[in-house]
Image (cartoon, rainbow, N blue to C red):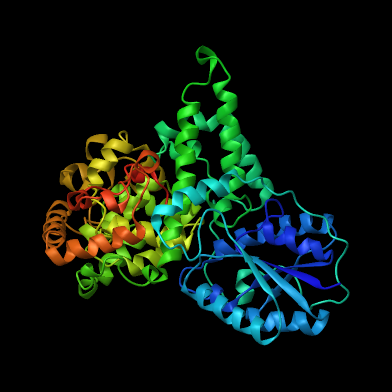
Length: 527
């Protein structure tokens, strides 16, 4: 009886897990998770990610042990670990989900395929969520996504038992054991399927009603968004499980007479479902073109910002010391919690890209470490969109003062995360540099001392960025490249996605429009 080895990566669950179901047909299953040094040392990984993963692994091990075979946890290069498995247990077949990860995991998978071929190990990969490997045309993607979402979810299988033998050492590792020096975030979410299930239940029963109306403001988003994004990123729940439960909840709500139906619940669930669709839509971009982790999606923007990278501006931005209270408060919240809502994420990227005129690559690494829900496919696709280098999206140059006035009108969020500004009157809270010197002395907020001066003139720098970017977008070569980008990555389902028709009906003038209207409410993970 040949052994089935299930390689867990960003799919830390036992339910709706095709590789586990198929491996269980061998009856003897070895569930395997590997901390890989190359991934741990990568510039997009932080200690909070490892701590969250460890909590997920604890839950996963309990679920697997109850079914007959506990989780085996190893540290090392994956091919070397697989060799130890082969030496210890003999011949096996390898099962895993397809992964749309960073460039390191992409290269790693190629090495695993070579090792399997060289050692006579059959490796079966299964589709993950709605992402399609070797997709030939974007025209087909939405239909494939819906077909997958309609398929029945798979129950967790039982195993005959664990194989004879043991891999040592074996067990959960702490970040500092692997050479990581950064600290965990004190207020981050906790991992594990149990936590995900509780969050999801609470969202469906309470928070969905205010989701659509309240997700944009940092004041209300923490309590109204689903907060499932890190669990989706690490696969404690599958997208299909979530989509089908949302469909069921919508059916149940539709059965309730409108006068007594929870107000806003249907709209909230519909909006949330669209984001589940968009979640896969953006990951598909990286799956189809892995190079966008490294370079501009639209090559016509190469060299526009790269030579002008300003290290001082970047450091002030990442530390929350720009002198713009909403920008700084968002960075302080991220530093403590590992989460901020989408509109504020978009604001941070926009400010870095337009007002500070910094290329997106290094800020993307910083935010990847800061976001607990970091998902490479969404992360790089969204950051390129927000920095204006896709060529097929409207430039979104946010005004940090106006956004603060719109989303935090009383300054509550700013004062919560920037206590140095707690005594600043409302009329100055978003532009503290305009306070008279006498008032600064009176309340103890000295601009340039207790709170920094603005790093730039945000109106002048935004104006310059707009002029440069739009002038480039009007050039014939840029428009031709934009068509290539759209053909490869653009939305195809206008009714569902707020996008454009298929390319056979797409007019050149439509390339000026923003790709999907719902995008301003998207999360770089999922809200």
